[in-house]
Length: 226
Image (cartoon, rainbow, N blue to C red):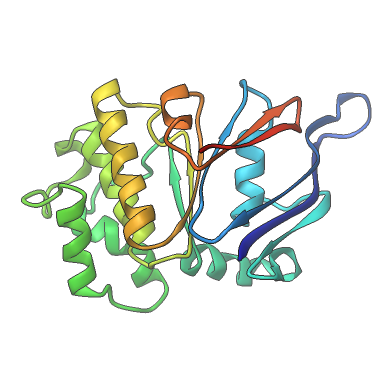
């Protein structure tokens, strides 16, 4: 069953002679629960594609369907709700609030949605992500790997059907990178969430169910791994 359908997606920045086509007529489908890695050199359109899939940016042409619904038929306010409730976004830079502790940072998007975090699931995430004992620490008291774990917990707390991660290990050493990817993979399997990861790391690509490769804004290969 497909959860994400990308149809003839294009994104152009600038106009006239300075226009840059960041994404050029890209189409593919991702099934529910799949772990997909998107690879490509710098400037290939990877991050642009992820932002369009997550409702962060709007395309010039084409559409993105999530569960059969075109997300760009929604207003900006409706897209903000979609990002809070249906998509978990994880970035290379952790984007934690410096004055909030671990628990507060994890629960912030849920509280912004006018709800209280589910205490049992919050505790489960803290244990799964190795944050037990760190709950009341501020971001500056944590290592880079621990901060990324907090960012992942924040993305997972709403139990979104889709996790989109843009270079989630880009600021980490090899040991922390491997641990973070194993945790994302575990969450993908345990919670049956669709996981899409942008990376330049070949080792991460080897963990995926499927690898999409971009070059110059175009999809150049789509490889299903055994």
